[in-house]
Length: 277
Image 1 (cartoon, helix red, strand yellow):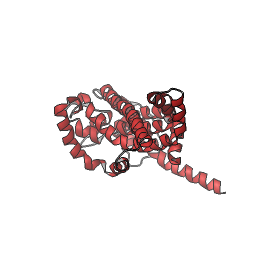
Image 2 (cartoon, rainbow, N blue to C red):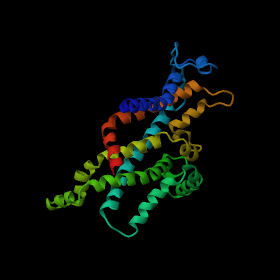
Image 3 (tube, one colour):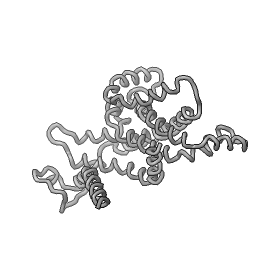
Image 4 (cartoon, rainbow, N blue to C red):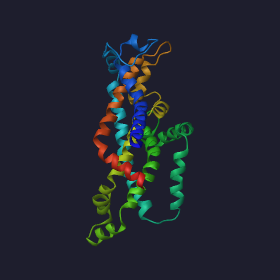
């Protein structure tokens, strides 16, 4: 009886969580008159691809897509590398102010993103004077900011995975003649791979779905805009093109779903390891 109640509760929660996604995909296939109908229904008898056609024919849609892919993949790659090295250093080495640094990693995650947008804008403008590639209107500014927000959580999460690897394993590798560098990349890195996958998924989603920073930092360089900004074309003062917005949003979820499918096994074990840690 208890199991039946638990399973029913889980199904209800899953249905509630999945309903917005279902409605988005459904609206993408609905004709315009059904979308704006005063009596919407959760089905359509006249599915159409007109909304997808309008979404895909936006000027520079392919360029926006590639910009989002570039930013997300660079953020994921750098986040994996830096968080792995930082988590290893914080776990394996004892140094001054180590505890203070760990506390700061937690505090950073408590600050609302909106509160930092304006200071970051001026910071990126100043950085751009010295290093243009990381300045305003450049994709480098988005990479830098997303990396800054992804690293604290990634480092904190990976600490548990690194700490779970016995120190004796490193000592055995050293006795066998392995250097510290070789131990890191051939022994420790594969062992903490599930944690790296879990953090990379979160970094990818954060960078891929970002609208606030893209809108703030990419001001006039249309060629450097990302995919979420492309949906603004369908937001109009008189009436929004909800069909195209939903179609564009559906297309945006495809890379995320593909990424999940590719890493789902390691993701589950990574999240399980994070809970245990």
